[in-house]
Image 1 (cartoon, one colour):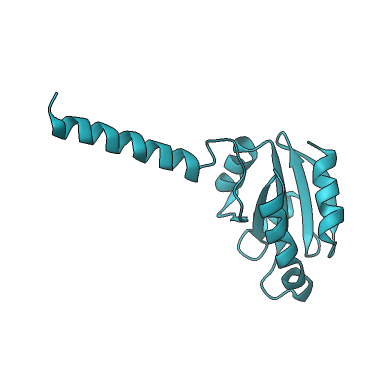
Image 2: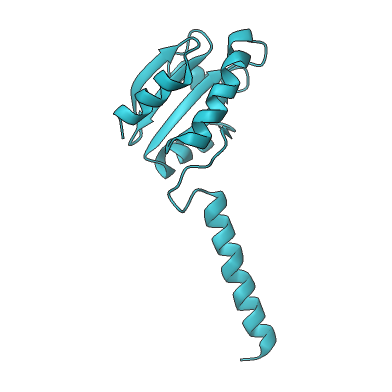
Length: 134
């Protein structure tokens, strides 16, 4: 095996490691919210992570904007994957989970919805909710 072959093998191995990290393959939730891009992406998140805390929001929603720093802090501080679903861009998902107002947050554990919260909440109460369903 030549040096070039060795380098190609190392590059491929590193690329695979980076792909796994980007996909959450390590099992650890990302430190930033994941913006959901459609139903397939949403289902992929539910299968990749044990806990997914989903913030259904709209760009025009004042309370949603107030909640954004809290959601970002939860992503950095909890073990749950934090997902953000724009209800205007993902109307079918919002309808599927009967989101009638924003912000609505749904906690999924092992792919199943276990809690739903409507309206702005403080970080501590949302973190406790996530911790209850570990």
